[in-house]
Length: 142
Image 1 (cartoon, one colour):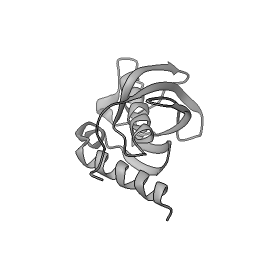
Image 2: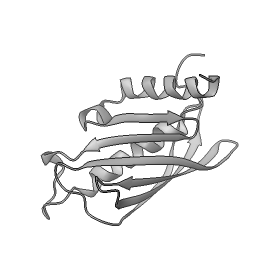
Image 3: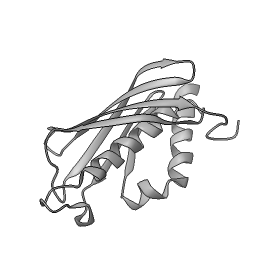
Image 4: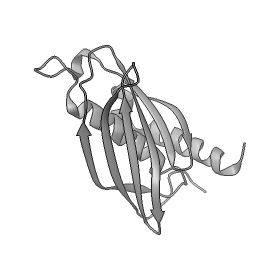
């Protein structure tokens, strides 16, 4: 395993172990690598809104978590500076959503990440863009 890959995996594990919000939502990290993360989550009944579809906050939380694992994959603490989401199709109860976060730009302290959230059938559910800012510290001790 190359050092950058191993570091990305250790960072994701350390973050997830402390991330009670992602754990409570039933999220699972499926893959991480430098600047990338794929995270899944089953849409539980508690995530359903008044239109009988997944609440937008559920999809946003999933995308935000994937973004966080991707932008912290190099062991530099990075936080969200700005995020936006576009909802494309509704998700349904019982469906497993997958969020794939990809780094599209990284310069100095600032990064841009695009996250696609897809449903069981591969359809696009939402598009999320996150802007990160590196702050002091490391995710795991060096």
